[in-house]
Image (cartoon, rainbow, N blue to C red; front, side, top):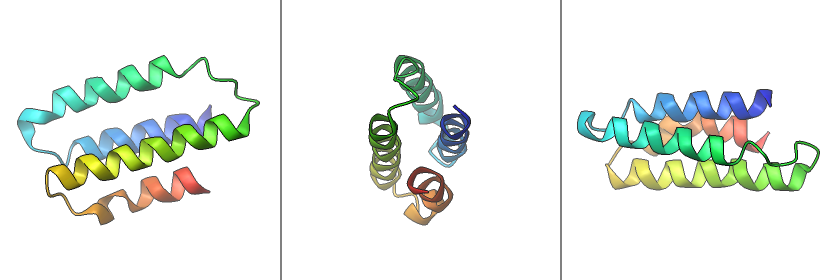
Length: 82
């Protein structure tokens, strides 16, 4: 649970780097996704790993879509893949 909260917090920090008019949409999108997946079995490391990788990959895609330097997601990468 602690790692999931760190990932969520970092995703929200990345949302702040997006254009102002897109931030509410992506903040809501992130929240909805984290809420939807809260029922994932915390004892299943494979499922959690897949979700963290997906969060990172989606974040990279969105940053690229808005031409935000992808190195901004380095901390998220560290959290998700360690």
